[in-house]
Every structure is written in structure tokens, then in C-alpha cells.
Picture 1: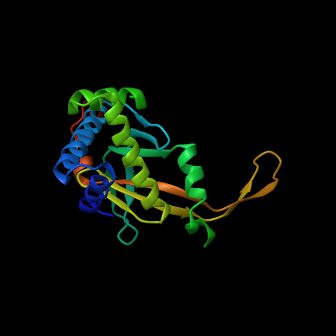
Picture 2: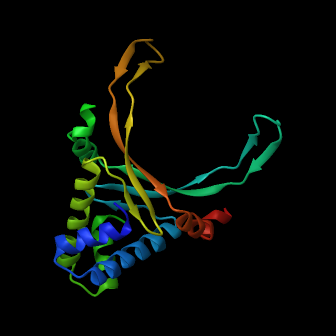
Length: 97
Length: 97
């Protein structure tokens, strides 16, 4: 489900136009950017937590040439699922495989 | 920012009541559950992709007792940030530390 399909699906479910859903989704993502940009965690009930974590710099060695490169530190958005989501996923048919 | 603060923030930004935002957020999470439950990936432009991944069963050894336990396979919701989000985070003050 890509961005376009998500908007169409939400519009149908919410009884709103795609344009309205788009602006709602944009406002949500804006809020996420603002919060995460300040290093704050975002918790969504029954879904999970978003948190920015810093990955420290590290030395990478090229397997073939043995050339060492310093990989600079970077910020990564980490998602930790809630226990409710975990339980929901457990019941999905995919788990039977 | 917890669930309640997120709803208050979104309500203010969108010019909607908290009740309206709550039902919108619930509908969004419902859609996520449905899609992810079917093993589908969800892509949100300029944010990232959500994908359910199966973690295989593994043998865990207790460090002190050496007792081996089989950890059953489980489904985990994985989030991969988009390159746009990556760039945005790069510019946050937190990266200067």
C-alpha cells in the first residue's frame, strides 16, 4: 500500500475527500518532524513509539580492498511496537507459515 | 509527546476538535492493522515504510545457567525511514552533540 493507496483507503474509511486526508496526513507528518527534530519521542497508543537515536561513528573495512573508512555518526528514527500491536500481529495468518 | 499530547497538537494544527482528531487517528491505525495483518507494506511519502517481518525461531542460552530455550518465531513491525526523513534529521540540533 503506497502513499496514494493509503490516502484513498483513509478517505473512504473516514468519509472525507482525498484532498482533506492529504492535508491531514501532511499536518501529522509535520508534527512528527517537529517533535522528532527536537529529539522528542512520539508515543501512539496501541501502535508504538517513535524515537530518534544516534548511531555512533564507526570504522568500516572494505572486505576486498581492506580500505578503512570512517562512517560518520547519524541519526536514525527508531520504531518500537507496542505490546498491543505485537499481539495483533501474532494473530495474523502470516504467522502460520 | 504521548498520545494525548499528539492529539492536542494535531487538533490545534488542523483546526479540528480533539474528538475528531482521535477518530481520524483511530481510523488510520485501523487501516495500518488491516494492511499489516495481511502482510502488506505501508509506504508514507517523505516519512518511511512500515513492513512486518518474521523473526525466525532461535536458541537462547541463559548466560548463568547455560539452560537452552527455544525462542519461538515472531512477527515484528519494522520501520525504514525515507531518505527525506534521513536528511531532515541530519539538520536537527541534536546531531551537533
